[in-house]
Image (tube, rainbow, N blue to C red; front, top):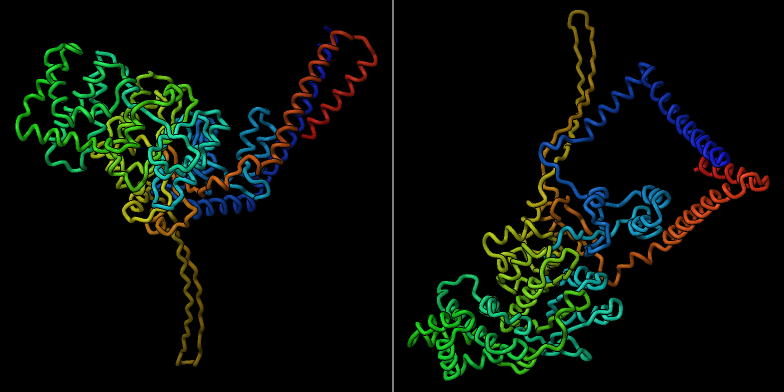
Length: 612
């Protein structure tokens, strides 16, 4: 026990020596400061020069305080964390100080220094731009840019390659599946489902099947509600609807037919093909109404639905049925009917994080198959909602050409309320105007308030002006300098004398003015590799886009990986030696050889700490 107390005393003594060494340098700096202040001329000159410099070089922010996000801003926002974050590019204006990175590598715990390795980026550049990500606290984001601006190669594909969560991908060209499908199956062990009726994803992809009614629960108490949600998605309404009566009636007819099938059979035994058969056959439709009127299925709700449909007579009834069938015309395609006839996978894989669904539909048939896309998204969204809240669940939805979907109630619900259910939405759009197509009126304001926006390759003036206004103004200093040089000459006629005078004046002034941090024309003329990210609660970020084929954040930092391993090994060996010394102190308190070794080790440790 006495030897342990002696050892503790030695450590305290070493700590005192280190504190004395620190106080020495503090006293040197303090003495230098006191010396400057104590000498009047030097002190006044230094203080005056500093006051003049700060007054001329800084601004008050009276006209605006907008600026690009720096390293500290993004670090506080969590944009450098990798867990549950989508990569968006390198933050050009947030280049870290390499001395800070090295300091973090040397002094941080080994299990935290990995973050500093990631921040270091490319080894060999003087001040590398770090790779920024959208933190998981911001669940949804939209990438807005013209065709060919890199929405897929710089944002969608990197997310698919790096995020192991279960995903739903709307892939209109099949490119996302071809680039990432096999990788996700091999790297993350996912079941890859490709819903591709027309085989646009390429050879070798097995077409998956999804019966939308199979995702319904078939409970009598909720059959009508589930049928109404699916029918609302199937009925595609125009942006400006002047006569909503026929679309409303078509929704009611489809709802009644769906509820009838779900109440009579198990959901996996019926599909949308049966709905189409009933609505195109007058006899079958009449038999369905008679059956519902004579029964009390779903507590009498279906009888009520049939009675309301009976109110349509003559030409009105024919027009309502024609409207309903017009929204189901996409079912008159053999590939689509086969795809929707049954389900070839377990949808529960989305909830367990082991499934990726690619919805591949031809881009030239977007309008024709709009109802199909809307119905599939609605069914999957409500299936996840029905699983209940789970804050540890993450299911990103990557929606390519999201502006062509139109208004979908289920998508708006996932946007506003879906974070705690696991929804993470990624919208790929052509322009800001498409936001109004998907979320009209007040819903557009909600979209902007809850969604991060990334603008890349902006080509239209309206979008550029909106971005410039959203970023805001900054205060800039305008310097002006004026020089005056005058000569004068007076001649006296009395004594013929003359007098010359010369004056030379220089005046300098600084005025504050306000201007937009980035003008609309500057954004339109930005290089193709640039992008601007607007994140809620974070200053605007100027980005350099990182295509998936050029992003190598881990392999570029191999010297830092070696340094990280060295720090971890040094800490591990140090901890092991410490415990060996502690145990040996109790075991061999009087051994002279051990005491000599302990003194030598203590002296070496003290020298090492003082050197650091």
